[in-house]
View 1 (cartoon, helix red, strand yellow):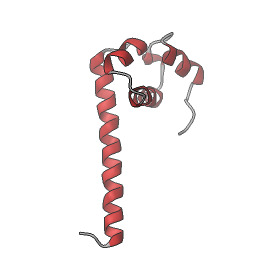
View 2 (cartoon, rainbow, N blue to C red):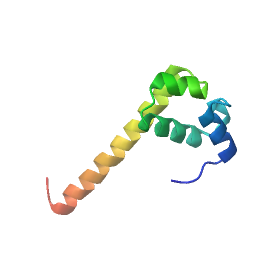
View 3 (spheres, one colour):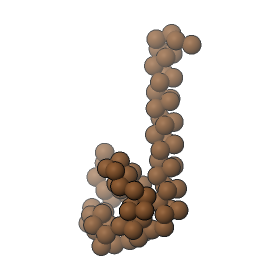
Length: 85
């Protein structure tokens, strides 16, 4: 994982001191996914990052789809390599 574009803002949003809108798109997506992966609810992430639950959910769903697509592509490549139809 690459370091945040603006580490100070990233940490401040993580603590709840700044709104997520101060982050770059990539930093915001990474933070939301990390918080979600750590077991935080959509509501908690939204409150902590000062975003709406709609926006939080939309970003997490987009990342989840991208990760699922990446996984499916890797599985397809693996199956082709093994000769599995």
